[in-house]
Image (cartoon, rainbow, N blue to C red; front, side, top):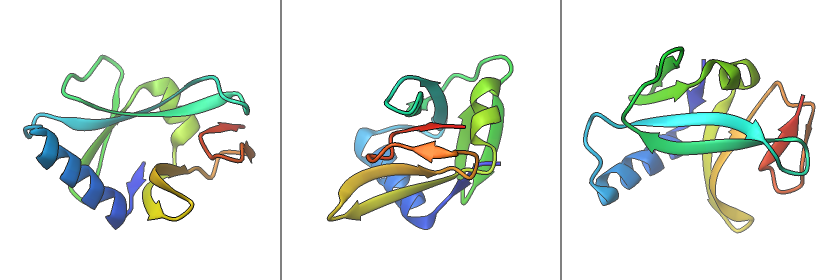
Length: 108
């Protein structure tokens, strides 16, 4: 399961409204190799599910992950920060044993 905070939900809905996405779109989250800690987070808007995708819904937001990413992100919370330290989505991942200073990459 991937959870979504209220702030992240509000920001996702704002983006959908501003960009004109229709109800067929969802949030695709994932993991890829890279970054200073070895793995980086990905977040996109998509409307095409692929074979093997894992689908979750929290607070009315549909989230889709490929199976590999799900193994790294199970139990993660998607949050949004608009504070002085930086604006953007961030992942609170209980599986990460180490993260880089910017929070964009991690390792297990």
